[in-house]
Amino acid sequence: MNDDFYTLLGLTKDASQDDIKKAYRSLSKKYHPDLNPNNKEAEEKFKKINEAYSVLSEPEKRKQYDNRGSGFGNFSNFNQGFSNFDFFSDFFNFRNNNQRPQQQNQKGSDLRIKLSFSLEEVVHGSRKTIKYNRNVCCSSCKGNGSKEGISLKTCNNCNGQGSVINVVQTPFGRIQTSNHCNICNGAGKIINEICNSCGARGIKENFENIEINVPPGITEGFVYKIENGGNFNNSPNSIPGDLIILCTISEHIIYKKFNNDIHRDVFINFIDAITGTDNFIINVFGEDIRIKIDPNTDNGKILRLKGKGLPNNGSYGDLYVHINVFVPKNLDVNTLNVLSQIKEKIEPTIENINPEIGFLNKSLKINSLYNN
Picture 1 (spheres, rainbow, N blue to C red):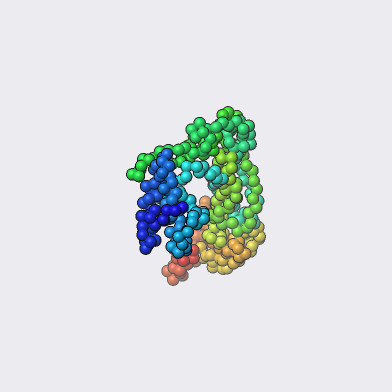
Picture 2: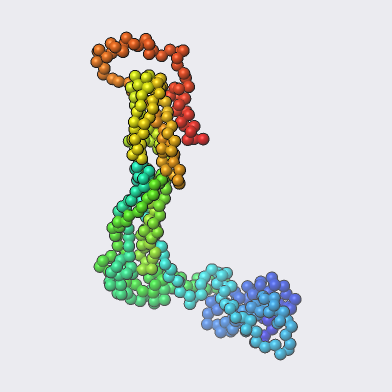
């Protein structure tokens, strides 16, 4: 090429890099082939401008160019890897018209279900069977929605190209852009005969039955993910989504759960509360536990059994036993007469009442145990 690169860009040899960049932007817009359709002179000018810019925009190449002798030849080798359309396409944010959109493997939607666990399953772990429906790729058409997966024809909207040429009017003139074909979704093919199995959806609902092993210590709100256990979409190359399982702990008829601790009530008669006794319970581990009720045990007293609560990462919470003095109802006359005879001896007085053991103070203590 015999044209001086500085002259092509309308610059002098002492031009700065910013000057070179600004000149290139202005001239590339002016002579771009999309703004000058069927104009060979403009196309040739555009090529020369790009070659000049590819050399002068690189300091090392520019230095070699400035030090050239009178016999300096073609600098096209410096332009390797530089696309004439790179800058203009980036500036206007559109693709080269010859580029077809790439088909990508699209992931299907996730499925979310709740799975409830009993307190015993939290303690011992369990093997759960999960039954659910999900969308899977149709085996008859292999996901493309056509009869036997082969009944396709060329899309008339894009002529099988997968993209459609549009003309856009801009301040710089008319520009041709390439857009994704919305009829064939970029595939270039459309269904000729519909798949009888899925009705052209490409997916079918399928009943799934899977089993999972759940270790001891599952917690409320724990999320269990099974990869690729979710829905396929209607793309032949789709990847199924995931199955997301949200774990919940069901209410127990006897035990109440607070984090890894468990609480339960034990009822005794007021004679045993006065004289003391032994009581036996079966805890969530299936163990027989002996509970010693001391003499003069107050109603609402709490006994703590360390390490008898729920498992969690190798450790265990505690079991709290709440003592309830049972008040009998519908007693016969003889029993009521006997009780009335000892009433004065068991009547509460200001002198023998301890406010610290009342229900109000005890409930406040329990709340502070889990809220602090």
